[in-house]
Length: 97
Image 1 (cartoon, rainbow, N blue to C red):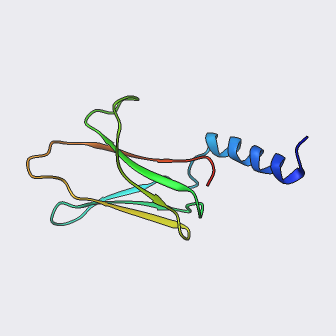
Image 2: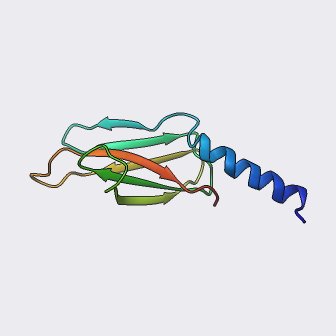
């Protein structure tokens, strides 16, 4: 038997699986080569992970960095290695803290 809070939490987690972000992450190339990836409207306490892949497919993504949201924004800064080719980036979030 579930308590109301348990049911509410379970329902919220399922809803977040369909709508992982309130606003899409923003990617900005900085002068000097760094790439900033910003998640606004982050859910505090949830873990966000920046991943990269050399082609935009559903497999082969590798984790670059993970951060737990403190406040409503998570910012990743990726510094490409010398001679590194083009990459695609995505941010994934766990369903619950």
